[in-house]
Image (cartoon, rainbow, N blue to C red; front, side):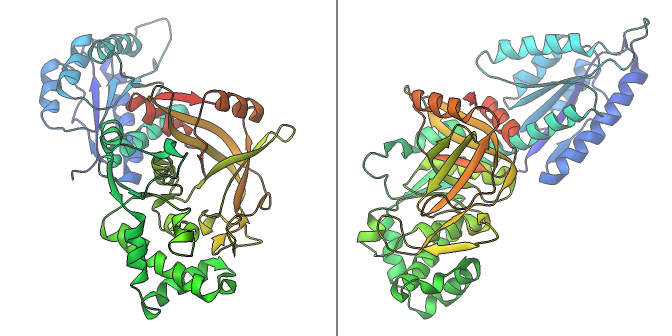
Length: 451
């Protein structure tokens, strides 16, 4: 697969103050080079400003972009943007430069008027699509932040086209919100959905001898606290299941899984899959339980954008005075999220009383994002996005829990999200990724609900 490509297209005409324009061009190239390096993007930059349609066409012939940074280096009429649009159908960031000097004299760039011409053309070509926009000079912090989040968002849209997400088993009765059609998820996100029965991984796990799983057990014991207290049969069966899952995701290049859990792993295998999913999450593979496919995709985006594990669970409690929402699940949180004073403590499942499952409160964090890819009552995709911070709290209930103090009213978030019919699973991403998620939604033409 080709590398993710960012194309810088600085359009304009030669009748404005070219000395000023050249300075902005050089600073823009410097900024884009800096922001492209962390993801090793293939940045394509013209050797000079594109101050004629012919120069623009010549540059267009050399690129195959996944993101276009379309900048009015000076004023340019709509013919320039139209030439870009008729050749490419990829995300666009429209960048307007600030006038470098306002002194009662000559208008040096007139970039803003050009932006209106370009935006008008974009909406004519793509009436229902959204594009990204920023106004300002290359050295401004807000400009750097916007361009950075847009590049990262476009990169995720690009990466999802090569993502294989595995649905392991079916959702339990009454959990249909987690199901996905392969055509639906591919059409909207570019993701390939693979399906496998849970019993296939269970049957594979049963073939492993005690010697076959020694290194997997040792690896888990190095991350968990108290796994040795789990009855030997459950402890060994957990390691068998861990090897089965790990080999499946590795051998099949799986980037995210949505796994069935109850009742099968209790009734057909005798050991829960909760702790296995925790280990898989810490391997960098997003792993949701209760076979929630869009929960797994939400986790994938969160983990890729933060480069660390995220929390997946139910909203189970709300404190109006503290302005907090507590998220919880049976014990699938990644070991790396455990509080330092307890570590990734192991216990039994809160309802079935069979282990191992994880049992801890999560570490605090000053900036987190609550996120969910969901669908409204008409089946249209939508993003749930809210900002907050994780408080320094011990576990709230048996299982794994996280207490988020939301930036806006927790009471309003809970009341309105219930009334709007949001699914009962959410992701808490350890990082402020709201800007990237908004851009991803725009690029995919998905509605955004910001709380």
